[in-house]
Amino acid sequence: TLVYSGGHDQYCVAAGAGVFTPGEMLIATGTAWVNLAASDRPVFDTENHLTPGRHVRENTWGLLTSVPAAGASMEWFNDNFGQRASEEKEDSKESFGKIDSVCSERMTQDSGVMFYPGQTRVSGKRGAFIGLGLEHDRYDLFLAIMEAAAFEVRIKVQAFEKVIGGIRYPIMTGGAAKSNLWRTICASVLDREIYAVREPDMAAIGAALVAAFGYGEFEDLTKSVKRIKIERIHVSPDPNYVKRYREKYGKYLEFRRFCLE
Image (cartoon, rainbow, N blue to C red):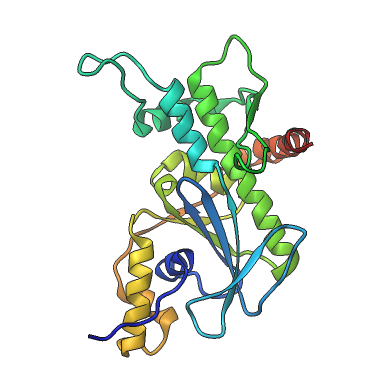
């Protein structure tokens, strides 16, 4: 039996998503949102806490950072405040389809609510909402959580660009990539085109590509992605939201600094 060395799980996700060359970036969404940018050299950056690592592709490196509580915040809020009466069950969490639908209708105007997802319990930097009024309901808070995750990704993109140059387009994977609204928010906050991959097993696919490359099935790992059928959804920034989010991002940074003091 032939056994081939794989790689770090997020670098395998990057391989499956086709993130190999400088300017390409992975947004792997889950409990934490992992951000990984490809690089042609190791970069050591302590200011922005970017972790260098070897890519699964030869002579390629990456920079990795994360938003630890991005997805966890949505799950936490839904578990604790998204419950509603149900005939079948005593209580039932809000479906993400319903959250997408209602929050999409709220996008016509800014509620003024902002959320900071915090870091981890170990760091002591806790999350917070601001701007709440009696007119708000849980969907305004769901939307604020989605926006906060996108704002945090923008911070990471800017950190990457300081040390390795421009990011052409990010590729979004994981649970949030299935949400049409969350994809649109991310593209609009970043003000750039993104691609979303809804395949749930990208790490396994990337590891399989690495093994196939080691076996000799592919001459070039970067070209191997073209041999597998994975749907990529192209998402453009919504011009109706770009300006609003540019202004709200500035307010978010002020709010974030207050939370981190």
